[in-house]
Length: 252
Ligand code: 13P
Image (cartoon, rainbow, N blue to C red; front, side):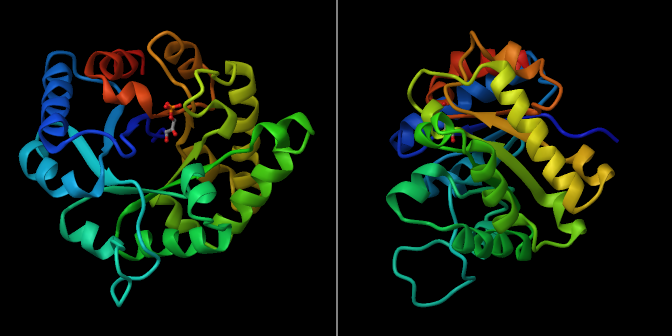
């Protein structure tokens, strides 16, 4: 068994309901004409998850959410739990996105609890990590990513990795139009895989899907995907335009 290739769209806080339906319909239509080699995952805003699953759940797309609570239920106003997502048949949840770390002060410890919540409810956790520009410019990027990966994932049993995907998203590449070069991305992906190999084992590390995120566009997707340790992409802006997302899917 080889590891999965995944092209995932993170819609962030974009699209009205009718736009979300139209975009999903266009993506579903596109992949029906050209069946992808990669799995295609979509993380719309919470509000649309149920609707899109009921309308497009059988069209070859997997749906998930952009965040979840660390708790299964309780008096947590405004929060959404992984058990609720599971009840909608959501397949995955993004955890630890840099925008949540930056704007909601999420720490690796809290993120680890969210990963536990996802796994407890049978949902794949897509763990997002990555350094800032300052951290890279001062040569600390490997240390930062090592700390992020170890604090969020090293407490897990090896079996849990069946439902873990890692997304390496350098903060300086997100929404900036500046993509990590294929060599920079490959170097960090290989490093992340080596961390998992050292902590767990070679077979587990070899099965793990590690996605790259940060200004993935139709014109750079193929060279990124050609790297041996890049197993797909977590796409922001370009996943909001059906033709762009379909081009990236075709490059997978
Ligand atoms: P962009 O593709 O817009 O840079 O966003 C990447 C991202 O944050 C995906 O989670």
